[in-house]
Length: 189
Ligand code: URA
Image 1: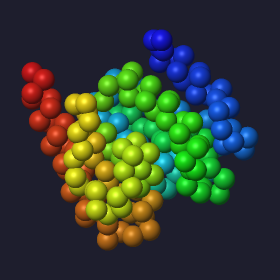
Image 2: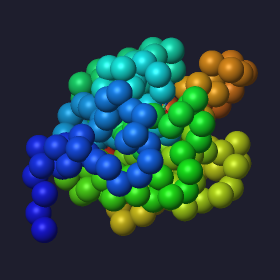
Image 3: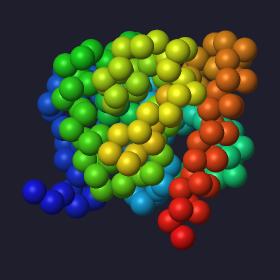
Image 4: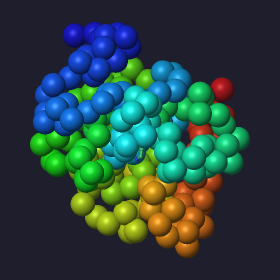
């Protein structure tokens, strides 16, 4: 069945498919350009996101904004989403059944947005989007191509805040992303 963008957002906002709906304040479907060429996927809403209904608005969101600006882009030009759309209690990692219940929404977002490049922010996004258990420290910086879409696993901004020595590697990954977007743009012309 064809789902329109608004139908999908409404479906996500009314979701009760897993236990995370019980304690949420707001659902966080994602935000940005629904036709974005670059999509960034985090883990799940934290406290600030749960209160505002928007992804990456807390401390790690500020760092993500800086990264997006350093790529020469605006938040409104990319699409930012999470593996789970409701905050896990105490910011724990999503459980496999919670991620599985929510993946259908992310898949529908992929189908509607049709991004060329997807940045997987951290091990939770890597694990559930690519089904990959390899540690992020080994997978980061390595392109994975699936059905013509390019995935770049990299560190989660909160990992960069905890350990600033990782920023250098993360910046290398984002430079790769910028180059890939330019390369794909040229190939489209
Ligand atoms: N961390 C995430 O993974 N996602 C958010 O939206 C905020 C913090």
